[in-house]
Every structure is written in C-alpha cells, then in structure tokens.
Amino acid sequence: MASVYSVTQINSYIRNMFATDYALRRVSIRGEVSNLKYHSSGHIYFTLKDDGSSISSVMFAGKRAEGLKFRMTEGQKVVVSGSVEVYTKTGQYQLYAAKIEAEGQGDLFRRYEELRNHLQEMGLFDESYKKPIPRYARHVGIVTASTGAAIHDIMNVSARRNPYVQLTLCPAQVQGEGAAASIAAAIRKLDALHPDVMIVGRGGGSIEDLWAFNEEEVAKAIFRCETPVISAVGHEVDWTIADFTADLRAPTPSAAAELAVFDYALFCSQLSEARRGMRNAAAKKLDRERSRLDHFRQVIELHSPGRVLNEKRQNLAEMSDAMMRALEMKISDRRRVLESAGRDLGRLMERKLEMRKNELRVLAGRLDGMSPLRKVSGGFGFLTDSTGTRIESVGQVKSGESIRIRLSDGKIRATVEDTEKTGGIDG
Image (tube, rainbow, N blue to C red; front, top):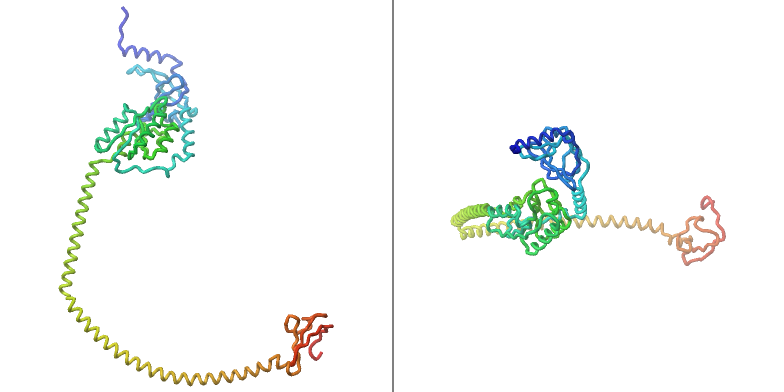
C-alpha cells in the first residue's frame, strides 16, 4: 500500500523542490502589472501577466529601498527579478520580487493615457461643464450591475440616510465585451426619466475589470447627460475616464450614496433647529417692538401734541414780530445807505465821464493826425497794389504790375515802369 502523507508534508516537499531548482531561485520575468496593491505594512502585492498567463507576485517592504526606484502603476510593463517559491500554508507558488525595473507602459495603460489626453483636448473634463449635485435629491438613478456589491452598498447607505428617497436602478453589464455599450445605453435611458442625480459605477477590480469605464462611448454618454452624474468606480485608488468626465467623483459606491442621498434625520434636526431659531428671533423682535411702542406711548402722554402746538404757535408769532421789526429797521438803514451811496456814485460817475471825454478828445486829435485820408487831402497819395494791399516799399512791386493811387478827389490806376531803391525820402 502506498504511503499516505499530510498536506503539510506534500506542500513542504514541493517547496523544497522549488528551492533546489537553480532556475527558479534566480529568475527574471517580464510582464504587465495588474491587481496592484500597496499595503499599509509596506509590502507590495501584484499580479504579473502576459497574453497567455499570470503569476501572483509580492515585494516585501525590506526589499523596496534597494529593489524599486519608482512607483508602479496598473498596466505598466516591468521586469521582475527574484525567486519563485511555494507558500506552504496555502500550497500556492508566487514570485518573490527582489528587484523591479520599469520596461514601459502596458497596452491598456497606454490606451488609457491616449484616450484621456484626447478627451481632455476635446474639453470633456472642463470644469465649466460640471453641473452641481443637488443638495436635497428626492430621486436617485443608479447605473450598475443588478447583482453586484455596488447596488447593495448604495441601497444600504440610502436606507440608512433617507428611506424616503426614490432609487431607480437601470441595470447594465459592467465588465467584459459589450459592457461599454450597455453602460452608455443605461445612462441614456435613465437620463430620460429625469432623476435629480445619477450614480454610475461598480465595485473594485483589476484594470481589465474596470476597463468599460475607460471607453470613449461611456465618457461621452456621461458628458451629454442632462442629469448630474456621480462616478463611483472601484476603490479610492482607482481612477477611470468616467471619473474625469462626471460632475463629481466618489471613491466608492458607498461614498457616492453618501454624496447623493441627504441624511433625513440630520435634515429634520437642522429643520427643527431652524424653526426654534426663527421662533426665538421672532419672539425677541416682538419684545423689542413692544418696548418701543410703550416708550412712544409714554412720550406722547408726557408731551401732549395740543400743548406743544400752542407753544410752537406762540413762539412762531413772537419770532414773526421780532423778525418784522428787525426787517423794517434793516430796510430803513439800507435805504439811507443806498441814498448816500447813490449821491456819491453820481458825483463819481460825473467826474469819471468828464475825464473820459477829455481823454477821448486827445485820442481823436491824434487819430485824425494819423488818418490816411487827412494826408491824402493834404496833397499826398495812398498807394495800393491790385489786391488792395498798401505799398510802403519799392520791394513790394515789380515792373509791369498794376497799382492804385488814391488822392483826395479820386483814384488813379497806373502801371509800374521801373523801380529804384534809395536810402530814404531825401535820397
């Protein structure tokens, strides 16, 4: 009869076989990073895969300082050097990484980057297109798988926060071939129902699992949606094209429900507090107005309008009489002053007028002596050219030009035969 071994013995035997195989003790493997997780302990867990297969991998925290010089991302192509060993407890083998070098981005990650840059250039991520999420939504639409954990998380959070909010699920295929078209169609269908806000998403997974939310068809369906959209794809570390296009991004479906569904208990508490505040404010204002009314009533009682009016009338009459007397005295004084000033002004104007007349006679005499007509009447002539400009120098005329000579009894038209310049009249 063949020997019977325990599970631990078999797993230990297989581990020893791996340990003694030189090729597995020092091996370098090229592949694409998937299911990447940076653990809080410092360890890094990931899957290394190619088109045909995959292998679970881990890099312990103690190896990171020397063996990893960059931060790995989903879809990145790397070369991992280390050993392939068996974990005895589970009987699974995995790659224990001692050194990881980046070889380039994987095909999916490159497609992701290209589409993200393309849609960003088209303006689909622009903040100016983002619609505000309503604060008190009464109808929440949901696009996700009908059997996944996401819908259950959203329903649980919604029931806890506000059982009166209407939830409408438009189920969609969220993974695999045809998922993008299914999600886009569900968004359009749900948008036609005009909910207050829409949650689009699914639970976590690898980059391949979430890839439908990186398709252009889904991004454009979200962008064209009239309903404000909250994206909730994967976990907090997962970012998809849908997250950039949506009006608001939530790290998980549960967080999306927290954002979309307002807390009814908190709302009622705030409403009650607001009512109390308004009642208190109204009561205080009413007390203030009553106090003012009592004060005004006392003022009216202490100061009778009839008595005040009579006093004002008497004061007005006295002031009127005093003003009339003062005005009459002022008018009398002004009249005397004006009469005296009028007499003085008359004498002053007569003297000024006589002085101006004398000055005018002198100026008139001078002007008469300078008058060209007077000189003309004394036997002199007044010469002008054909345009009427006075000729004062021989330089103003040329031979053959017409000139005019004005005498006391008429005008002479003449033509210049010749000019001769001298030193003066005597010359």
